Length: 487
Image 1 (tube, rainbow, N blue to C red):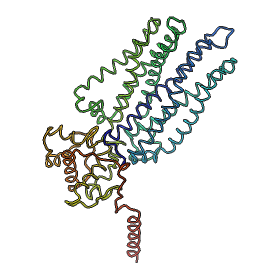
Image 2 (tube, rainbow, N blue to C red):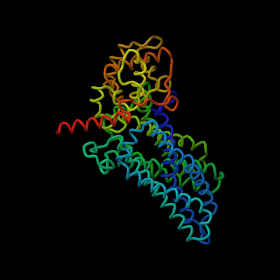
Image 3 (tube, one colour):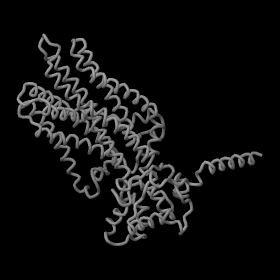
Image 4 (tube, rainbow, N blue to C red):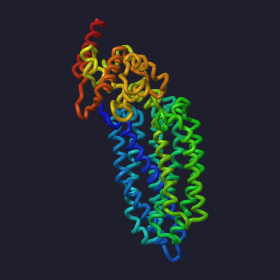
């Protein structure tokens, strides 16, 4: 029941997660192998009387220093931040995922700890590794080990992300293996891997323009290598994107136009295609220019492609999060954290009777607004606010007209059928009384301009029917009833 009424709960998760993906993909999965490859080039191209080209080695070290600082600070904090924010905003979904992927996450955590150890060894022993060829070769091996472990962590997490989009046959045979080998796993992994490499190459070229002096041979060589790296990975990004697109379920593709931005943006959906084509084209142009005219590559020339590739990665994350709606776990749990199989029960009894956190279980005229608030909190607040981002009052005013009171009858007629028109919204789970209470609450919000505070401010009311005492009494009564029946 944590709620940020000004920001939107899911926006909190998205902001942290997208920043983490920028760092994880761009500065870990893709950047570490890029750096290791360049360090290896320094040894290969060094004069016969030197272990490595020390000027070249120092340039690559400066790049690695940027990645090391960012990944071990912002990257680590946002990684933990995802868990923290999801546990607050979406506890039912993360709980369900942990039950399915417990051993996968355990393995990922073990690999991640190893990755942390390796990145500390790799960076902090860099200078000392230049004392002998044996030490330098061992250091480069650590770089490749680190590259592999960074990729493995992503490979495990991508399985869970794919599962949330399309669990495949897990819904009929609930095993870890079926969950892990979901139909979107491999295509998404084959798209994310080269995308991470592409982002790393463009960002690495940008750092070269910062750390290497102009007109030097080292700068020219580093820009050329970055160009080779970019051109090598761009075709795989394109192929991976096509493969990934072809396995996305049609229902998710139908959400695509709205997923890019908002409903108003849907009419400009074609811009996404041009953005993707433009990003790939910019990467190719940058790579070719780096090979043919490396001396002309400046910071100003690289910053635009760099922003585009990071923007492309950000849009991909936004779209991936949205297209799976109305589900948060495909075919299993809706984005309001209610399981699809429980909907018949909610339709019959109402959501409040079975909710853990509510002050009302039986709706009367006196508690109608309080009941409407609790219905909103339990069924709408995961995606909507009252007066902030994605405001529920704004949604209805946009539909029925601004500057006039909302009509309760119109809203009551629309909400039970909204899923048919906006398929990315879950069906309304409550009964008739709860629908009327919700409508009354939304109109009250429009008239008063009130907001909705989360339990972090107001505390929480436990449903008396779901208290420990009630549950214990119900179990005892059931057992007594069974004993009497047997007698």
